[in-house]
Length: 67
Ligand SMILES: [Zn+2]
Image (cartoon, rainbow, N blue to C red; front, side, top):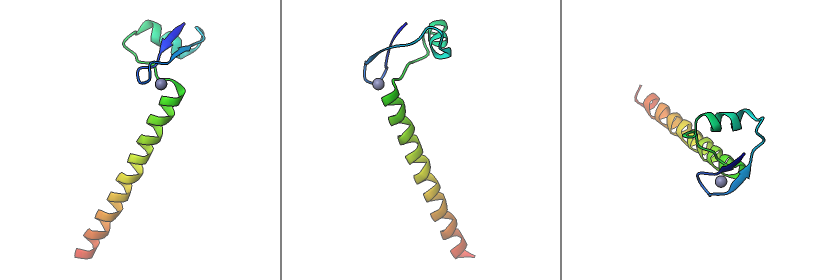
């Protein structure tokens, strides 16, 4: 089946046997992302996670200064 990436409109061809293809066919609302966009989102999410844990470390350090 042919699928279109929601982010960059790239058309990809998915093997009909793939679980992802079955999921997209059964639930058209389920969005498809090409590998490149998927990686980009994943990296961004991980970067945000990393900065969140950094802030957490800073906050914890500041708190311990009060004690
Ligand atoms: Zn894409």
